[in-house]
Length: 55
Image (cartoon, rainbow, N blue to C red):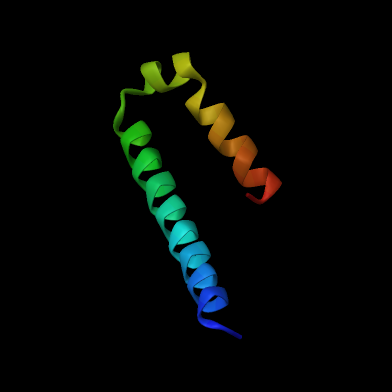
């Protein structure tokens, strides 16, 4: 393995961590909204559907 392969692997790993943190931040924000507003934008339905699919 050369240095570029290791660097590419690290970039991929850091990108996944960043994506996970952004998703968690978004979920927290959406869950902090009033229930009627979440229902209007479809948040509970979209979130539960995604959890059932295993993503």
